[in-house]
Image (cartoon, rainbow, N blue to C red; front, top):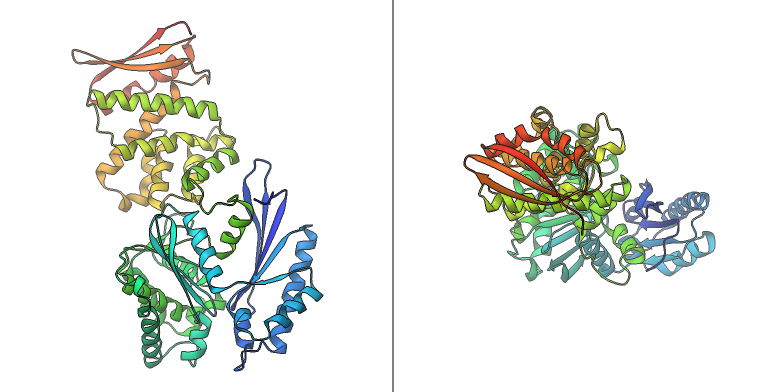
Length: 513
């Protein structure tokens, strides 16, 4: 693994855009993206019939790289990975381009193969989502890469020599395709996908990366007034993809240009891209269409600086929560003790059949425990609100958007009124039973937190006893528990409502061993 001391840069020379991304390692050890600069070069337009990148295309490439060079020098970045994809790969004068870049800039141009493109996209997906089996797709300007992976291992890959920009150039004469042009384009895409037997009827999720997929998701979120930010792991079905196509097809081009969520530079190529997604969805008979905000560049960066010679992070979700703990100065000792108390409470509740807490619920509450009251990092007075906002609007790799809201509701639980306020925009996401369970788990987590109010870990063991119609919560302590007694007493009424039984809390003093 390369030691990322401060900053690391990647330049991605695509057929439609050229982009510079700069990563930085924070004091806490977390690596974050600090710059993401894109220029719309459309190099594909300058690849002539003889597959030579012409003089104008070379000048645009060089001008862009020299502009990026000023930025990388400003940041004093010693290592910049400069990669090129389909257009440069398909250029017969690519050796000349490699030499030109080496002579005129600080960079060394590396041309990625179709396998490289497919592999790095796959690598980014399996190390930023919990998906075990699926089909990935990355539509570039001049090529389209697909893979099939199972158990987080790439089984098949293919690179098609067409992309959103080349499809536009080959099949569409104006900014908007005619019905006949779209018919021919669709038939071409179908024939291409049908050539791969390993795609047929896989019945797995399609995971899409890249700018065209990003724009489809952003358009859909805008049209449905999506209540939270974030596009990573956003999920759509076939009907929703088709809805976007029909919506855009009904607009004049000047209205397409003003569509919320759509980059202007993709306005004339978005419909061909959507058709590719639709046809792949059909041939795979996919379960869903999921967007990964991590793609080619992230895959390269992971291999260079994160994975330490391996292909897979052992646990994507655990890394996400570890990053949260670092970013918000979480008291790890306190969290670990709360987890112990929460799991003891769950064990006792299930033992006495006071509430049905399933295995999945236990996983959820343990995750919520790791980020409970996270918002106090910003301010204690409104820590509940800060906690919910931070967790619900931050990308948490490994969690679906619905699960992200579940964790946010538990970790921010304060009282019934605040719970209702936070969940209001998401009522359609949850059944009444799910909401009841989330509130129960939130109350349970808040109670467990009160049992370590002094942060001294004085409560060591929890046991329930049923005495006639009363529930006795016996807490064995190793030191003075006055603070915990005061804080836990405030939670009794909520516990009684949950269990529907009169509840008493009894603190027992025991000497530490």
